[in-house]
Length: 238
Image 1: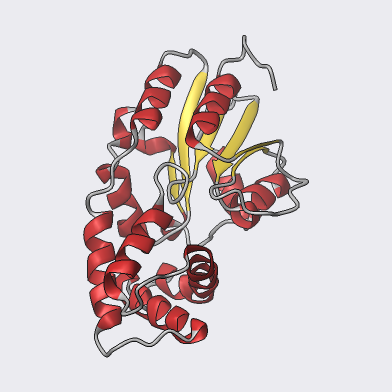
Image 2: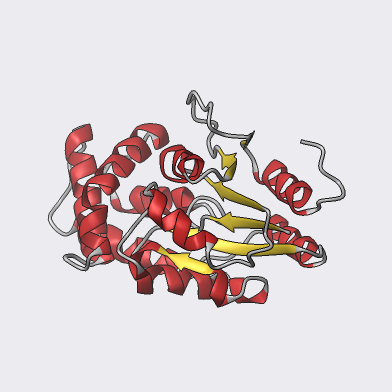
């Protein structure tokens, strides 16, 4: 039996696209460089993520801070209230997230494969991430018993303990456990500490030395194909 634990953000849908759309609509600069904005924004995310996870600040407050701090570091001017407008627009976009046609087809195919268990392992504040689970319609394929949200445990990826907790939620007969995620640091390096197999979805083809990844893909089509191959124990070609 094989299990794949899917990350949610920037794996099952492109959070980056939503962030950039909200940022472009909010900033007073005509052209925002995607790569530089996202690099700094995610760095700021790592700084205050623990505060969101433990409930010290809300995800909405975090988005205001991350946006304003990113523009400040990039030397991009912003007006009072821009951070709030960005957070409101990003929240709206997140409330309307959908799986792509490729992802839906992948999950439909995975559902046909015997001895396969689809799961979720996602970092984030509990209510926020469970809302995404519902918005994306993941209950159609993934049982809530197999969903692990870091905010429910106070432990987040790449901490080996959250991977150990996740492993216990699948059948003891499960002999292969995989992580499928976009963050090399949190998903791939974290899973390797727990001796899991790893599928790295390198969205944007970031140049990263990735020795821990068993499989690396950079687009949705390749990601979906790899997941189906992994799940199908009779047709493994990797």
